[in-house]
Length: 602
Image 1: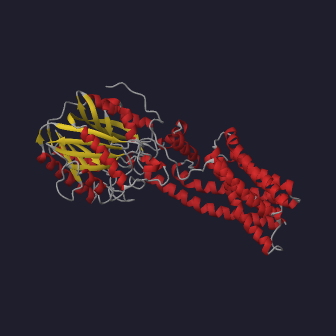
Image 2: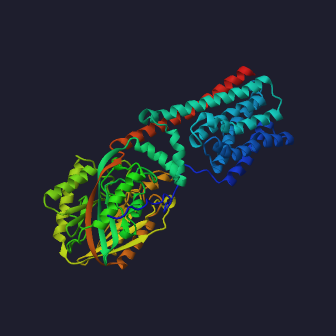
Image 3: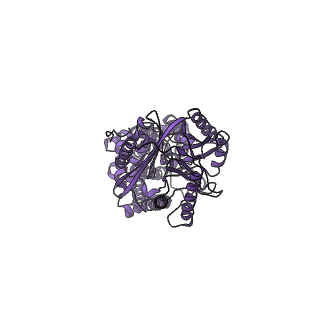
């Protein structure tokens, strides 16, 4: 058994995107603060030069600039973290919320001055929205503690209120109105956060808000502490499962040239957590002794997501051990990749006593195949005296919410019969003779720009009996429906048979847009060009190889298990719905409550 190696660095080879929204650069934000502050000053203090300039500087611009600079250090001093670019954007957002409210109030003073409270009451009214929004934002991103966040949230509105006190004559009633509006805003922020957090607390006994900061740090910085916090959440609900890893190795001169790694692991749940970014992690676990590593999607679904790097390391250790213990070269009998009939879900290639089977329903939706379906296929073929099976889910025709093959369904039964037929067809097409293999890699892709992960596009070309078969593996989460056909057609002008597959790597989910299937960001022409380049390189590398195959069990690996992902997604959906509803409800309550207080005090 090979010596245990260190786990891959969490930073190595990682491309990162950003979740939902990225704050603009500080220079742009600070420039907009100047403009929006001037607009607000003209609405509150009028357009006479001196009052306008004093209001612009003391009531709006200076509080915003100070808040942009102090929010981060104050958050750190109170045990949280808030980056400078986010601090700048938060200060600008507070002004942007005030702007339409000030415009409406000024309109009221112009149209119905007798019924509209004066400018100082307007200034008091504008305090609430800033307190409300800053408390919400800082609680979620800086630190989930109202007590520790409140002093930071009050920086901008407190300086704004001080500016008002310096510039305008303020009565006791107007001062009380300022305090009342701030208190109402804090109460509304507290109610919103409490309500939005209830679904996750009810289902998982954990605060979803407390995971926002670790999630941001994991995505943007691959921060080890953030990753540990997220893993701890998932590990609380994990359960043991007996997994399996298979390796199909191609070697030259006694050294591995290429390895197809087939762990029964789903490459999720998200970003680089657990088994996400599985191709890069498995390649690092196997190390350079494996040659060029291919990690296609095996039949598995989110039940087999791994919750932590430690659990994946157990699978990686088994794979390394298996790599060095692979048996003798397979018999020199092989076939090209063949389909038994036109509408078959499965195509198979014989390599000695192993049948490499690729499953796709394209152009119909093609997504996860339950492990139980594949396990039944492998057991029934073995019981009938057939070859060993290396089963791949091509995962190459994305339609949202469609294409899964679950146990006991007509699709599962058809897949069983199609696989048996494909294996028989491959056996019938088998011929004696050497196997040649070549690999080609097209790298340089970016997750955010191209929707393709760190492994890029990899091609394995196998020549047997004078016929060439190309397997193209794209490191991404499925392939937009309709893209597979043109890519395969283009490749089959330079090889006899081709298949295009994706890894289902969930690392691509961390950019704007979430699912990010291959072909959504990158054009079909670019995909064809990349696949063709990789296959062309592989053809040039063709040379005789020995083929080996082996399988190893990995007992009691903790996985997320049945139903966890559905529960989590349902809770997140409930959280989003509750947050959206309460966002509007608490904002309207804030405005109404503030107005009631002001009219009562004037």
